[in-house]
Image 1 (cartoon, helix red, strand yellow):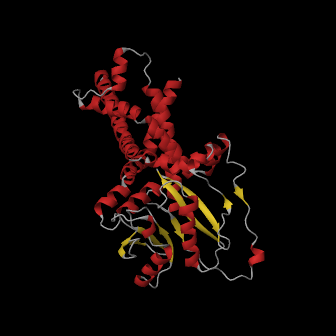
Image 2 (image 1 turned 90 degrees about the vertical axis):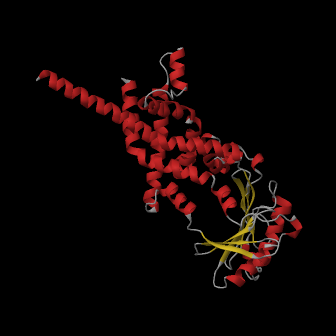
Image 3 (image 1 turned 120 degrees about the vertical axis):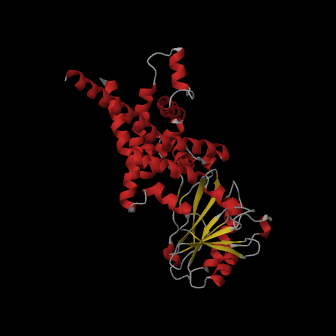
Length: 377
């Protein structure tokens, strides 16, 4: 009875979520290598490497972009390392500006609405209105998680005989297409199971606050002693705001020399607006993880919740900060990217191969019914 219910769930849930899963799998494959493809196909991301001392501060990058785009509001400067250009983001604009960090030369102004952005929108909300699409993606991911569990139960051999092991772990390429299709669904689905489960769970953490809060609770929660008291600005209310570019430069220098532990020349700095009391910066961008820092604009001291280096984080903080890296395969560099690419590709084929299995059985049942009817007439 339980096996029939499991098979019924696997069939109908698979039919219900098939198309979203195909889209999520294909777009996920493309996005895994987005940065690598862009670096290979453009001439403005990778540059000749210089030294740390030769890199120009955010103020120089700001002034260079402002000369080219005087009417644009500049939001932040993204330093990616000694051999990468600086990416400058603009407020209320679909364009990104790439600047040489050693000469301040504007290398390119590119449209953010490119092919990869199109793929990203498909992956995040299926090109639907955002609020609706995100719910569809979230619940489709949840259904796919259930499908992985029910699929494992269906795959599990009743007896671990030699023949059962061969059928469960190998594809008979010399068999007929129907059998090859079955093996592709059954065998490849098993081999991709672990990565698929990781992608599903991390995707659910991104989609649903209840899932994120559940993981935080199950893993013990954040440390209680990493909250930094905010500076009282009342005593500074009559003090004029610091120059935004000077503040950005000081924070950039401070992050690289006092806080960064990994890839110290990769730092994101936001240019503070007049009303901003805190300034955001980001460092330790390695393996798909990062470290968020917020600085008091007046004292240049950290404020709010402090994030330390990732290797000093407790279980909860490590999982939350590594969730994106675990979801995308960035966590282990090129090796895990390739593994995730293959697993994501397999996941995108499972609804197709599964549908063909169901359709074949349905056609067989229809033919059997017709033969029975002919035999009785």
